[in-house]
Image (cartoon, rainbow, N blue to C red):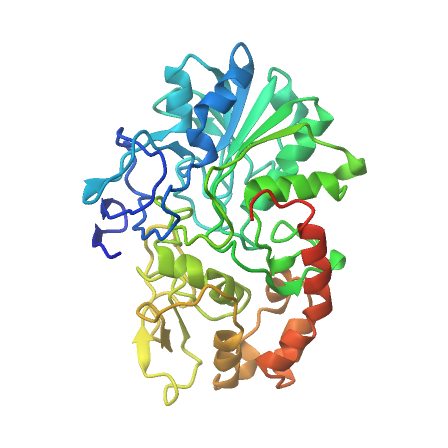
Length: 419
């Protein structure tokens, strides 16, 4: 299914063709700056996301003091989207307020409540202009809600779209929210959403000594779980401080399985603008730990890579990163980069090292490639950089992950909600 998207760096106007959007909606959001073009090949009945199953969770919220962990992806679709219709939805905060749910405050993850901050940028507390609700940032002074912030809450809602990659920080925010709720006797309601990279598990497993906000748990780079499944794993494996257990309720999706091809109707963060970028993100995301640009500062984020020090005789594609929406200070700003354009390839739903290996092998000055500490945080291990620098090919490197992947899959199986 194909469609056209006309966009600039501030406003995206979307014409969407969706074959299976589940129970989706008729109210247009006021914020279209994060709209994402989509293609869906789900089952005939269509996926119904957790947020849309209001009949399940509204009774749990009535008469309660509610906090919401949300961003621009936290929406309810109000009627089925048919061919060539506008993508219509309402933010969950607005919807719950309309239903007289007592929302006291909002907590926002990396990129902020409206999803416009740069990757890694500190986000300040504030007030939502539309609702006048206080917003507390979980990607600034605090990454974990404080006891004071939770003292007037009975229940917290977590409703954020993830993309299934360890260094995509929303699962780290989930960990800290669960930990804070457990410590302060606040229930946590998780509205589950599809994982667009949920059909596989791959990549190196994080080593405990390299834990950070880019990876808190000993899981592979691609974990193959939904937010709801991952929350169950955090609880079940005792990963919260002092082996605490969070009182969670997962509102499960209907008609979802891990083999579904699910296209996100809203850009999950500023630099994941379309399906192609989300599919390539597990592989190209490793460039974030190098001095090679991965498309930031262009309209093709995570669909190309390049650097001034890559070999111009090997890479004939060039581009020049410029500041734009989601990337105020891109790597190699205003400098011509040599690299590869992947925006038109048929991207496979799998993780590969071929792009990072090829870039390293074709760098004129190999000492410029790795930003070692940051690459280790993304890879979760020092070994991967050492393996690439030693000349190991992808097949040989993959063989070193095999036992860890099998061990993780056995653990993962205990927490899966969907086939």
